[in-house]
Image (tube, rainbow, N blue to C red):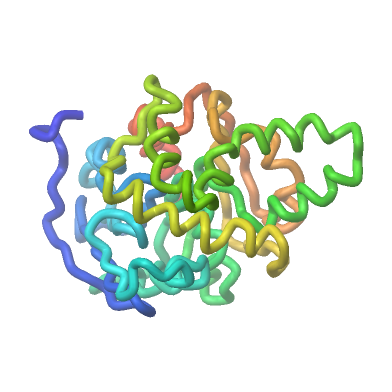
Amino acid sequence: MSRQQSPRPHTQWTARSTDATVAVFEYGNRDADTTVVLVHGYPDDHRMYEPLIAAIGDRARVIAYDTRGGGDTVVDVPDRTSSYAIERLAEDFWAVVDSISDRTGPVHVFAHDWGSVQMWEPLRDSRARADVASYTSVSGPSIDHLRGVSRRRGLRPWQWPSLLGQLGRSWYIWGFHVPVLGKYVPTAFVKAGPNDPAPAATPQNMARGVELYRANIVRRMISGPEPRCAVPTTIVVPRRDRFLSPDLVQDVERWAPDLRIVRVEAKHWWPWTHPRDAAELLLGQA
């Protein structure tokens, strides 16, 4: 999609959260019965959703925001890793929801990559039952789920190939944690798949977003709460995702009982490459 065709927000504002000022953008039909919230991943910002926003058109009220590490959201202490903890990201989401003026009902959430990873945290909150009508997750598993899956597979030798395969796909995560390599890995990450590029991978997004991994992956893979999600959930699994194994959805139904899994013939950035399909799936939850 060219910049001339890109949808422009008709309203934008900021929502104050813990240690951050979150940039929020509104598109679509303000008077629509359906409100959707779009949460982007790494190394993007809210512009990654421009094709999807265009595909939704005036069929819904669309709220997108820049998460910590991306776009125009400002973190008070940007060089402090703890500022990017998943608990803070959950607070950002609720701050955005609370900032939506004239909201009359629960929102439908669509998230991709790190946007999806972080969304599992606020969905643990009891208020999610009232304020979130549905959740569509694309290429972003729960870290707490991964912790449990990894431990179970580690005890089952016949599942070691699957475990080792995912470790290989996650090469960039471990690179992000090495100080000497940290400044080079983001560029390598983006160039790893020239036929499936990150849509909004600015140098600033790439550099700042690394803190998401440093603040959360090792910490929550060692210890964390049990995953829990009582919101109606659809997990989209791109079969050709170069970063995530399709079998990571195994056993999600243990803790997300209202679950649907949709497998698509696409690569990692499915919402960008297949916006019409993503729009129909999302609006089908409403």
